[in-house]
Structures are given as structure tokens and as C-alpha cells.
Image (cartoon, rainbow, N blue to C red; front, top):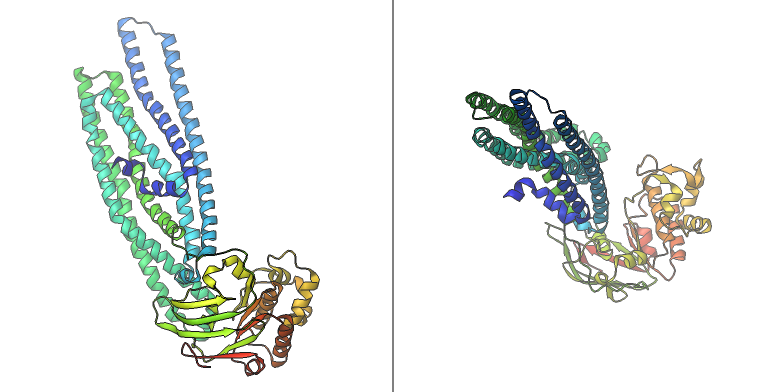
Length: 560
């Protein structure tokens, strides 16, 4: 119970995530504890000092200058140590928050690179940017600000309560009654708000995903006059967010006023009863002043701790959302052996497959492509052509059956070796911000200009590049207005060819090319890929007629 209160769940989660940083965090917590203990003694020293001065004046009439100097020096040293300690802790926790969230961002990026396409497909578009832009700052604030405020405030409360009991047990009992009421009200309101915090984060995800879809498909939306429909959908997301926000903020907003009323009530009672006790002589004047200082000191940490605890609950939701992705299971590889060198034979044997939550889309697909052959996979839309290629690339795993390259199941080929053996060009290839050359060469530093020119000639991309004012150094991005779709496919084919794959996959890559360019590119590929396997998904009759092998599919089955 005590650990849950003073060392919240979020810190336990962070300890499991980054033990190195959290060991330093524990050290900083210990230093804060030490400084809190020392500073909590200051009012008691001051009260003793006042009582001693009163007694000196009444009994001796002489002021002990040495006692005054020693007491003042001690108080100054303690307060100076406290300020220095707090400054160091704040600086180090701020740095730690940045370090942890930087590591978390890097781990999140690495995790996304390792996750299967199936898992990525289950994450709505726009949700991941929300986790990075909203949840990460919340986690940083948890480490660098809110937990420190909560922990130091809680320790300060404990130290002051102990000091109050030492000064006057009876008077402490009067004031301490208000503290559990404050903490209980804060905890109750925070627990009620936790569900709203989750709902609020989910609404932010939905809004981010909705805006991402709206921006990505803006042209389609305008063309089909779907603005009103999209606005109404966004209003639903916005309403969910507003309701969750109002509900959580309304409850959270009650914490500070309730805490303030409780501590002020305790203060009034303490003043009245303490003054009466001093008047009757049962409480020393110096100790009464010390007690009143403790009462004023405890007000702020009591309120701040209650508010910080509520904020920590909200930030814990963000932390859990990020850790859920980082801890999500990854696709397990089979008995993988590194150093696989492909020849190019592709075999599908009785492959069945269904996407998550859908009916089976491939029903016992079986065919093989010999090394060095050009195979065209054709068939009506929705017959499973692209799915076949996705399974070969191991973006998804078949429900049953096997897919082999040179007799080895693709599950038993490492992703690195599979990436070297197989290159793919899809219908809508990705192009990043940079020059045409950077997009083609990508991470292959060994590529020479001669290799580059030869690859562009094969794909027919050289003519288009020469027509540009800046040529191969033209800046482009993933925008069809900058680089048309047909040219993006030619760029992607050039990029694929540079990798010198044993198997080349082209998914509707010839779509949009004029017949002359299509013929030139196809002939160039046949020369370039001589002795290598080429698999093309296409409806083009010209490609079907010139292929070495045609695989016809209908309704998820191979018909010829």
C-alpha cells in the first residue's frame, strides 16, 4: 500500500524498462529525502531559538551572541544545502526525462522496423504520430517534473507531521485529522478520472487517425464531395474527446479547492487551540510559532502532492500505451540459418491464408516458378495476386501450407537474407524527401555512377531524369505533384535492380506506362534479369504474351 502511494505504478513500469536510469533515479530520490529531512528541522530549530531568547531575556537579561550566530549559521547551511540539492535533482531529472524518452523513441522506431506487416496494419493510420507527439512529452513530464513534485511533497508532509508530533502531540492530532481527508478525496477523484483519461487518449488517437486519413485522401474527398461526411465524423471524435476531457478535468479540478479548504480549516483550528494552549502555559511560545510554521509549510506540498498524483495517473496511461507497443509480441522466425544464397526457384504448396478478422482469401494455392523465368500472375481484381506476393516477402505468414525459395521455407530464411534475395516494386512505391539520386541509391554506398546510369536505362527512367532542369539531383518527395506515379514506379524499379536481387517482384509496376516504354522496360528487365526470377502481377496482355509462365488466379485459387 505504502509503495503504491509513494512509488506509483508508473515508476515501477519505468524500472522494468530502463533499470540503469532508474537506479540513478533512486539515488536522486534518496538525496531529496535527505534534504527534506534536514529542511524539516529548520522550524524546530527556529522555535527553540525563540524560546531560548525569551528565556534569556526573562531570566538573565543577557543575549548570547555566540548562540545566535551558531543557530543562524546552521539554518543558513541547511537551507543552502536544500536549495543546491533541489537544483541538482531538478536538473538531473530533467536530463533523465529527456534521455529516457529519447531511448523510448529510438526503441519505438526499432520496434516498428521489427513488427510484422500484420501488426502494423492493425494500428490505425495517424495513431503512431500521436503516441510520439502527445504521449512522449507526458512521459518526460512524469520523470522530470510530476513524480519529483509528488515524491518530495509526500516526504515533506511525512517529515512535517513527525515534527509536529514532536513539538506538540495534542496540537498535531488536531491538524493531522485534515490530512487523511484531503488524501482520501484526492485518491477518490483520481480513481474516478482514470477511466476518463483512457477515453481521452483514445479520442486523441481517433482524431489523429481521422486527420491523417483526411489529409492523405484530400483530393478524393474533394472530388466526391465528401466534406460534410468527414466533418460529421470528426465531430464525433471531437465530441468524445470533449466529453472525456470535461469529465476528467471537472473531477481533477476539485482536488485543489478541496485540499485548500481542508488545510485552511486545519490551520484555523490549530491557531485557535494552539493560542489557548500557549495562554494556559501548556505550550511554549517558541514551539507554538514553530508549529504554525509547520502548518504553513505543509499546505503547499499537501495540495501539490494531491494534484501531482492526479497528473501522474494521466501520464501513466500514456506510459502504458507506449510500453504496450514496445512489449508487443514479435513474429517468431523458424530455424533460421544466416548466409542463405538464393538461386531463384519459388514454390507455393497448398497455401491457405486469411487476413485478421476476414474470411479466407487464398484456398490451397500451389504453383512453382523455375529460376531465371519471367512469370506473370494475372486474374481479376480481388483474386489474391498481391496477397501471394505479400506471403512470399513474408509480410504475412500463411495459415497453412508452405512457401519455399530453393527448397527452404521462407520462415527459415532470415529477414536480412530474404531482403538481399528478393526485391519488390509495389503499385504505390514510397519516395522520401531528397534527391532522385538519394532515393535510388538509398543505403548502397558502393553504387557507382555507371551502375546508376545502366539501371536507369533499363527501366527507361533515364529519359525522364534528363528532361529535368537539375537532372538526377532534382529534389523530390512522396507527392504525386512532384513526381508522377508512373515515374515513381520507374524510380522504384531502378532502386530494386541496383540491389542485384535473385528474385524481382513487380506488383502492377507497369501500370500507367505507355506501350512503347512498357516494351522497352520489359525487354531491359529480361536482359538484366537473365538467369534470375521475375514475378509480375499485371493485367497487361502484352506482358502475359511475352512471359515464360502465366499463373492465372480466380477467387483465391490458381486456375491455370
